[in-house]
Amino acid sequence: MRKKKRKIINLYHIEKKRKYTNSMKSNHIFACFKKGQLVLCFVAMFVVLASSIALDKASAKETNITGDRLDFTVVIDPGHGGVDPGSIGYKTKTKESDINLAVALKLQEKLEKMGIRVVMTRKTEAGLYGLSTTNYKKRDMQKRREIIENIRPDIVVSVHMNSYTRHNLRGAQVFYDKSSPRSEQLALLIQDQFASKLEKSDKGVAIGDYYMLKCSPSASVIAECGFMSNEEDERLLITKEYQDKIADCIFVGIINFLSTE
Ligand SMILES: [Zn+2]
Image 1: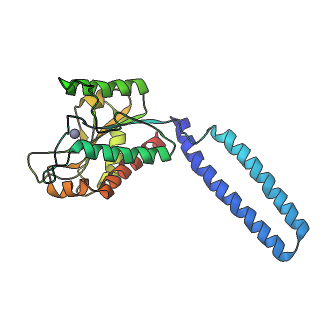
Image 2: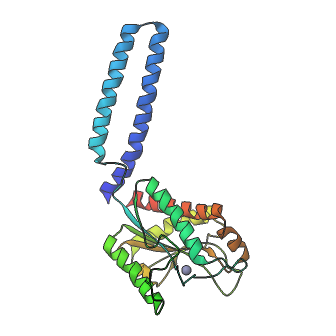
């Protein structure tokens, strides 16, 4: 894991160095022509060009990255799907499964932009139980587990929206299994983001005894991103802006986790 952290830092470092080298090139050329010192100008250009080539060679050696991919894998697991809508919006009757997928796709985009490999347990509105709907829940969960076991990711994040019989409960909360300190750490870092950027979400993390949290030795959390049973939360959760905010919180939490491992 230490190697991986170094890779992320190096990626930022290289980007900075490249920007600096480019600005150096243009400044040198401008100064030389202004003074008419052609000889000095050629010398300066040669030095800059040579250092730029050396820098690129050193960077490639330093990072050992081909393309933009980093050596991390995250499984994003949008809860429910198909005949299983999850919870239903109190006022708008929006399906939880649709919001889970929308948030998950936004999160996928953010992680992939950073060069992190992402595997989705589902990419469409369909469930994972196959054609028959008999006993679908068990098969749906087994399929999710099978995907995670095959991929052996660094991180698993299940995305859900909460619901409760009392309509006053609000906010986002992250659940983890008590047997996994790494999962707790990931949960804390995501919850930090929820607490500072989402409404009524400073309640802290919670221990959960869920099947999806016990699927693998990966750091695994369930993000319950707000209550479909609360009118104000529901009003926010159905908007693209708030869904993007949620995805951003999970994204930053994941990056912070990978950086500190
Ligand atoms: Zn759910």
